[in-house]
Amino acid sequence: MSGFVGDWHALLLLVLAGFLPNEIWRMAGVWFVSGVDEGSEMLVWVRAVATAILAGVIAQILVQPPGALASVPDALRYSAVVFGFMVFLATRRSIFAGVACGEIAMVAGKWWLG
Amino acid sequence: MRLPPLDSPSWQSPVRAFAWGLSAITSTVLSLVLFATYLGIGALAHDTHFSLGWVLASTLLIWAGPAQIILITTLSSGATAVQAAIAVTLSAIRLFPMVVSVLPMLRMPQTRRRHLLLAAHFIAITLWVECYRLLPHVPRERRIAFVQGMGCGLVTVCLIATTLGFELAGKLPPLFGAAILLLTPLAFLLSTARNCTQISDILALVLGLALYPLVAFFHTGVDILISGVAAGTIGYGAHWWRRRART
Image (cartoon, rainbow over all chains, first blue to last red; front, side, top):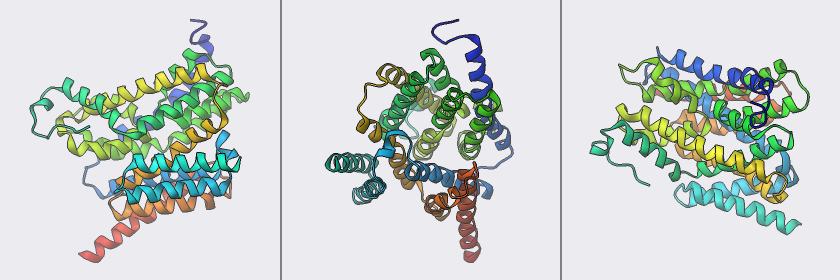
């Protein structure tokens, strides 16, 4: 088993520190959901919380950018996303157009700034 | 790509439904975002001296980008397994509301819990978003097979991306790296915005974006959870209040 995956120790670490602590929340969801009705009010709340958590993930990457994104100035990062969102609205909600234009705006801005 | 109408004979076999799910991954820009994210994860694993097989196994078993990045960075910085496990599990709590909100769309009265396990494993941000978009166009009895098809397709794409990223590590220009990292917030923002139809979701998205920087100021370690539960609850409150005002 050495070589491709690494040793057994590394694989065990992956299962114990990565797979199980992550998967437990999915399985908890499966267990929890069996008593919940599809039209239930609680699902409206759960869905809103999931949406807001995702919004938090988005905000985190923009506010505290990881890796190479940190080299892009704050103002440029935010304007690229706002521009992408405006294109999305202007193109009758085309995600592709919005993402492409936002990316082009960031790359062009970064290139122009040097 | 267009899915066949709900009463089409091509939905009669679960295998065909699986194949429709598999091909549905070509209909979303999020596949591209995942591809780019996993290029980054492959490169990160290479730079921190994990083996290719190990990082491929992590993609297959964990199937959540943030958890994989956290696991790799904490382990390589010399943290203990317990510290890594705590960091991973905190990041994974968000999977719980996603699974809880998607699974009722897959279920039939006769569905057993074990039939949902594989579909639940595939649920992460991308599949959560795509389920809301695509499942209304899939007959209910074929939804599990369809989601399994999408999940298998997305995992395959990401295994390829992980391998490519591992091999290309250090050879990519920095501007390309920045562009890859911007893809995630941009694509998730737009695809969530498109899915938001109820007042509760719209408010949750807007408030979630606004509250996070405020909460992050306090460095609690669970900032995203706090801002998420708060913004989601306010969003739900607005929905509840409007419903009450109507009746």
